[in-house]
Each structure stands twice: as structure tokens, then as C-alpha cells.
Length: 190
Ligand SMILES: C[S@@+](CC[C@H](N)C(=O)[O-])C[C@H]1O[C@@H](n2cnc3c(N)ncnc32)[C@H](O)[C@@H]1O
Image (cartoon, rainbow, N blue to C red; front, side, top):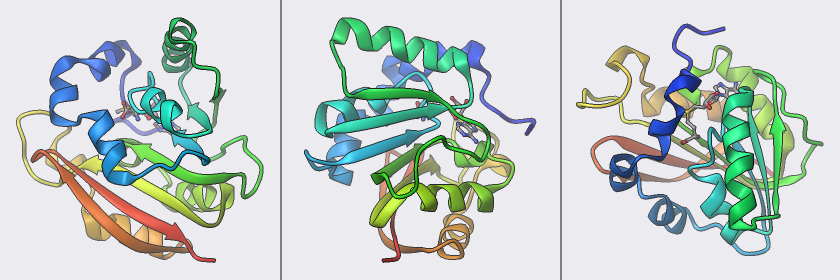
């Protein structure tokens, strides 16, 4: 396993007020555009920073993570919120237990810089998406900022594009949120 995986002991930080200011989840989802009758997968969902607002917009959300601690917190949060359209699933590094072409849109936020075999990961994203399905990658901008991982662990847009374009995606759009985060929208080739 990669040396720079997110440490679940720090998981409370993922929902901090500071983070919500620089990466406001509702604004991010509005920019992306979710669509009411869609099925999304949040891959590497953590404690549900995006899963919960996603569930309020989409018809169904599959929330996957390799770490049980993260999924435990997410499951606990869903109950008092009375959110019933999220399937919480523990996954393996490059294997998502979802049938082929089940998903309209995939969101993967701050995960790819932790992934050991990105081409395998992108292929698996491609497999679960329906033809023309959307893939949205959110990552740390590859610049030095006061917070976040060191520059050498961050991914360039060129690197992300190379992986996506070599695994059956086309690029459609991009966003920035504060100086810290970039988003890239791809679509699975039909
Ligand atoms: C920095 S956290 C981000 C969590 C969430 N996406 C967010 O934006 O709050 C990265 C998450 O990705 C998960 N992760 C890392 N590699 C993964 C993989 N190959 N498949 C699924 N989840 C993975 C980690 O366990 C962790 O919960």
C-alpha cells in the first residue's frame, strides 16, 4: 500500500469548517451539475463530505472506500439525517464491487494522489460507468499551498489527463476552487 494514504485517525478534519470554506461542497456540486434522476458513485468517499450533499441531489449514491473507519462514520451520519439512498460499500484498492455500467456519474475527490496503480483505477472507473457516463476528479492543485500534501505528492492536470485519455475518457470541462483545488470533468467514450 502507498506510503501517503490518508490516515483515518485524522478523519474528523475532513469535515472541518475551514475545509468547507475552501471547498464548499454544495457549491462544488452545483458547479459540476448532478441531475435529479442520476446514479452516482463517490469513490474514496471518506466520511461523506460529498456523499451527503450528493445524496440530496441524485437518485442513488454508491459510497465506496477502502477503509472501514471512514465508512463507519459515514453510516452513522446518514441515520439522523434520514438519508436512505446511499449504499455504503467497502472496496479494494482497484476493485469496486459494482456491476458494469451501473453508474451515470463518478466523483472521486482527493483520492487519486493516494492511488498506487492509477491506470488500473481509471479502468475500473470506466467499467462501472454507463456509456457517456461522467467522471469528475477533484484533486489538490499542483502548487505549494499552506495546507495539503507536499508538492511531490500532488498530480499535474497533464498527468490526470494522460491517465484518463488512455483509459477511454474524453475531457470536457474543468474548475478551480480557491487556490487549493482543481476539478476535471471527463466523459466515458460512447
Ligand atoms: C483525503 S481522503 C478524501 C475523502 C473524501 N473523498 C473527501 O473529499 O472528503 C481520501 C480517501 O480515499 C480513500 N482511498 C484511498 N485509496 C483508495 C482506493 N484505491 N479506493 C477507494 N478509496 C480509496 C481513503 O481511504 C480516504 O478515505
